Amino acid sequence: MEARATQKNAKISVRKARIVVDLVRGRNVVEALDLLRFTRKSGAPLVSRLIDSAVASAKEKDANVDLDSLYVKLAYADKAPNRFMRRWRPRAMGRATRIAKGVSHVTVVLGTEE
Image (cartoon, rainbow, N blue to C red; front, side, top):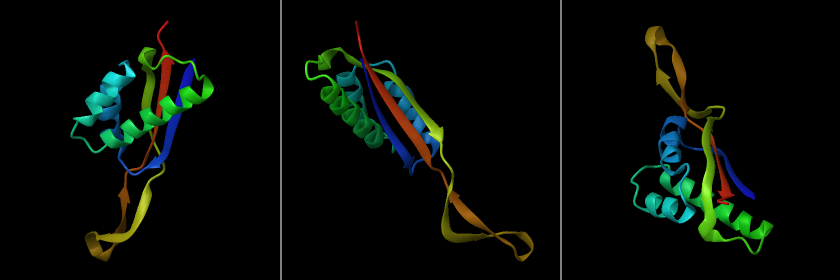
């Protein structure tokens, strides 16, 4: 059984999100949530909420699912289209460019250990 949770257009750069996602991939859900609770990275609360959401989705799919057997089967962060702020950065010869901030799509898939 698989349960999936996705966060679209998360306001975190892909590079920062991938660091946290790599920490929890392949781990047990309880172990991953404990690890994220004490991780001092900006993506840790985001991934923690995603795992909680995927656990709730697994409970919704099958009420008899064993939560101790759930593990993070797949976890990845992809680049989303950049969001441009309404601010400008001065450039050479009197020009200006928009300030772009990183945005990403983060997905977590939980599976059961057989």
